[in-house]
Amino acid sequence: METRIKELREKHGLTQQQLADLVDVTRQTILFMEKGKYNPSLRLAWMIAQVFNEPIENVYSFDDEMRGEN
Image (cartoon, rainbow, N blue to C red; front, top):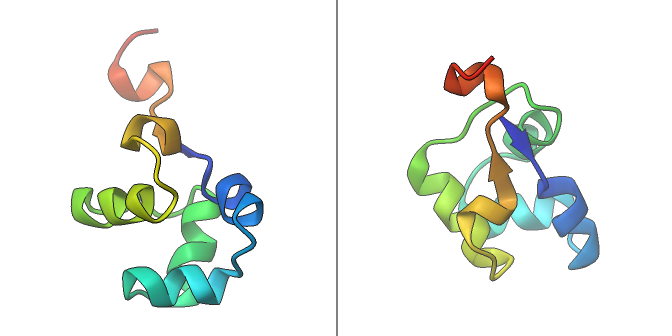
């Protein structure tokens, strides 16, 4: 899953720790999501989208291989 978390976090002037505190996860969770090493639960993905006041599909996207569309 691709994510715009880092881009949106920086645009909103938030550190990884500040975003983590807002959505009640660790800073490492935010770091792993930004690097594409962790896929959040639907609830966490929705909470992060709400912090940025963005629709969830503007924060996360699936590449074609994950959808099975080669």
